Picture 1 (tube, rainbow, N blue to C red):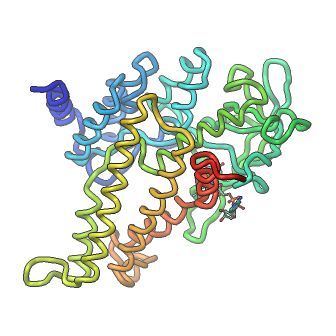
Picture 2 (cartoon, rainbow, N blue to C red):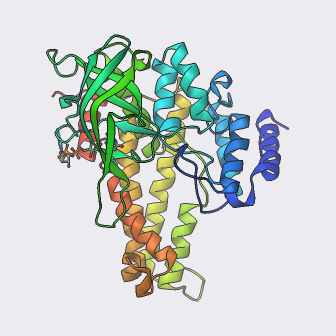
Amino acid sequence: MSEADEFRAEVKGWLADNCPPGARGAGQIASGSTKITLDRDTALWLERMAERGWTVPTWPTQYGGGGLSPSQARILFDEMGAINARSPLMGMGTSMIGPTLLEYGTEDQKQRHLPRIARGEFQWCQGYSEPNAGSDLAALKTRAEDSGDHFVINGQKIWTSGAATADWMFILVRTDPNAPKHDGISFMLLTMDQPGVTTRPIRLISGSSPFCETFFDNAIAQKNDLVGELNKGWTVGKRLLQFERSGIGGLTGGARAGDPAKAMVRTAKTYIGEDQNGRIADPAIRNTILNMNMQRAAFQYTAQRANEENKSGIPGASTSIFKLVGAGLQRDGADLKRHIMGFRGLGAHEEVGFTADELKATEEFLHLRTTTIYGGSNEVQANIIAKRVLGLPD
Ligand SMILES: Cc1cc2nc3c(=O)[nH]c(=O)nc-3n(C[C@H](O)[C@H](O)[C@H](O)COP(=O)(O)OP(=O)(O)OC[C@H]3O[C@@H](n4cnc5c(N)ncnc54)[C@H](O)[C@@H]3O)c2cc1C
């Protein structure tokens, strides 16, 4: 038996014994928030996976990770997918600030924050965008002033996902207003539960609010939570965006419950019907699904190849390619599903007779439009690819 096969057998056995039934299939996923109560099995699953370091399988063991190689992590994710196990922990802690601290954090910052992120003790949020600084992020105006052993922050962020339940924020702030705009920015960490931080949920047409306006009124960030050098935060902030984009674009892998290609075929058979050979009844739809599934497979293999070629971790500016193409594929998949479902894919109210799955499809269709905006819009990704990957003139 090869080493990989042995590892797979061990993982399979451990998952069978340790993944509780309530952590399989659709359901709650821990974000680390101290303000959200977890179901019993979700909490147990988080605890057991964190104990093995498998909430962040490729992180070094001294910071709470599993110390696995990328190919071992892929085996773990495959085996989790095979039993429909949900991810034990998701959010900006494990996917964005954690990897950034691994590269840019001081030893003290790594030891204070990484094991707690790995155990899902806190939820993190991202304080980047401002009302007049979205695509042009370096135009940000929120100020941080040196006050001895801490910084005092004043200003406003917007579109802060999860701010209402987050415990910590990583933030880009202006620390030198006289420097050229990319040079006077610093990257720091601060707690959300302090008198100087207020969040105001942004009410959406759906009634729910996944994000907030966040106001800073003499908020405090400790000096030992400045990440990277003072006024050099743009470099750290850009690297974090590359981690965010690789997550959105599917470069980082992760457990995937179910096979989206098979799920699309099942949806088509349910809503369009089958011919006498058991195939999707409409040949044009059959062809469109086939094309979509081939594009998805090609994208997945390209992501896998890029990961294997880049042994030192997540690539740099080329993450924008995966973000651009991956977000487009996700959006096109949701569009196709809605097209197949006809008006039943546009349900908004349970009482009008839509099933829970149909309502979820509408939600997914609307949500996946946002992946082409957050983490930097499609147009911004195309600009980065043109300038930083292809080296085209400005
Ligand atoms: C669901 C969701 C969650 C988000 N979560 C967070 C979060 O947690 N934290 C956070 O800080 N931010 C968050 N954002 C904000 C997100 O990063 C910004 O919306 C995004 O960067 C675009 O900025 P903007 O909304 O100000 O649009 P603008 O920058 O005003 O852009 C408007 C349009 O102009 C285009 N455009 C702008 N500049 C150029 C250019 N140079 N060339 C070509 N086209 C251009 C854009 O592509 C876009 O189509 C979130 C956004 C969404 C939708």
